[in-house]
Length: 343
Image 1: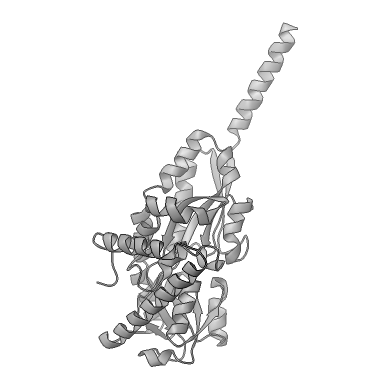
Image 2: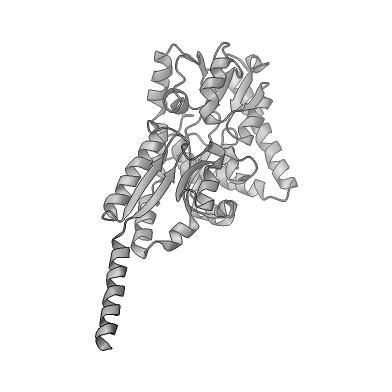
């Protein structure tokens, strides 16, 4: 009897050891190709996790929206279809209204500033984390500021926006496009090149990194107007059940590799501006800057768009002005020690 008990205990121990030896697969979904700087960061992060875990974590990547369309990526992480996903807040309009306040015109002057703002501990704890129910947010971030890139007609003054159909990435950018006099059109990131080529849209509000590198629009767009007027926000979220199943040391590894990375990720996005611009210029694009007088008009319109959005959200019972004021203060603080395209 004792021998049988010993054998049973030994078998149980061997089973436990075997289970521990099995690598844990982590499915990582993102909606752009591996050539993008953020994709490169995710690839590097995947390697850090695999090496740091001694092979106990194995990351299986699903780039270029292989798992599904861009708007679904938050829910891929929330439901467990993916274990972790890079998601676009503007992909599901109205779902992250307070977080998307960072996308209001001229809120932040770089991805580094925007990423530092969004990960402020007090801002996250008081306002933003509640909008991300169902996932464990590892980090929030923005791209570098962008503006309109067009195919046939140049935008040299504010009047040139009239009659143009321009793609937007988030509700706040949609409102800016409309206020500038153009018609905002929603187009998924994966369809931008096709819709531009077909003439369904006349251009897109985007950053140089997106135009030149992520979506390779050099040769399709012909004019880039450098407003540096807005950013778009994103998040990297982990499925909560997956997180809860991880042993303590792997939780620590994931936390350590995504905490305090605001400057690193922000600078990677900001660094795309130079090669992105070069890629489109080499493709025949003309870069355009507004005069100071025209930029003053754009800033005034941007302020009106921001005020209207704040009032809209406040009318729905949201603490929009408090979030806006806090983000603005944080932006001014971090602008003193960060890359700033407005300088």
